[in-house]
Length: 72
Image (cartoon, rainbow, N blue to C red; front, side, top):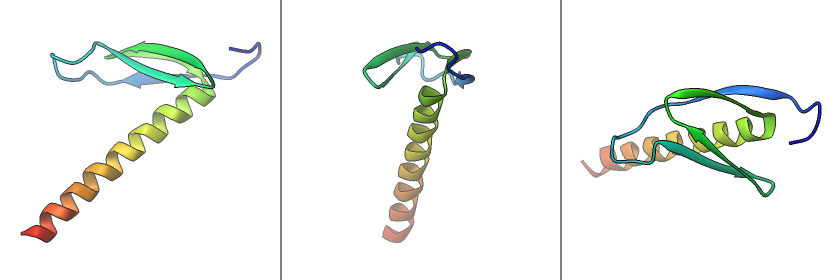
């Protein structure tokens, strides 16, 4: 993390009980392990990567639903 870097609060939702209680993300060679179910302050680039990953996951689920509907 660089000095004067903008920090953004992100919330990582809880997941299934059998999953890791932490969320792993890495940006530019720096790794972050964020607790699920809590808010964390992270650099803006990390928050952007978390949002990109969420959007990709949403798109995947939408594509699965579309394929399932088309197959019916």
